[in-house]
Image (cartoon, rainbow, N blue to C red; front, side, top):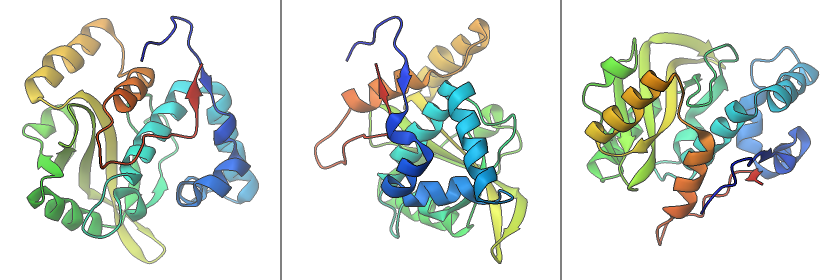
Amino acid sequence: MLLKSDASFNFAMARWDALAASRPLLHGILAHGALDVDAARDRYVQLMESEGPVLACLLNITTSMMAINLPVANPLAYFKELIWDGTMAQDRFYGYADPALYDQVKRAQTQGTFAREPGFAIFHKGATDSFKQIQFGEANVQLTFHADDKKLIDGVECIKMEPDIDYYKDLAAHALLEVIHNGIGGCLTDPKQVYVFRIAGRRAGFPEFDPPYVIV
């Protein structure tokens, strides 16, 4: 799949009300923690209108997370709310999740879905552990745990999470071709490229990558 040089995001399918119908789990997580329903909608609309690459990243990652089968449910099902501040970027976001997610990911590691990421602390400041999906050649989900940062949400002492998607599964390729390259160029992982990798890398037996937006 090739993208035009002037390719842009079309978020018609990701409008707030549409998302409530098509992705109720994600919609609920996006709304959680807001002062009221209007405030939840307003901050989401502002993100859509002013930070297209950030929203595309969020939709890429959450769509990919929902397609991962853990022993019980999928990774997104354990998330309670997102952190709506300057850390929400076009290559990652932060949020709080039920700590049961940690045991689920470790169990998924034994089943060949994830592998512990060596040297995770170098790339993820303050992290306590990190696991990368290993089911695709490119654009795998990485779940990084910041278990020392906790927040009580709906009676559950949740832990801070940092999901992202790396271009490359191999650690050396990730470091040389993505981290160092992006650092030198002053850029971040491009959600358009992740979109392309995910669509091109579809495998038999795995759900179709279908984020609620398209690139036109």
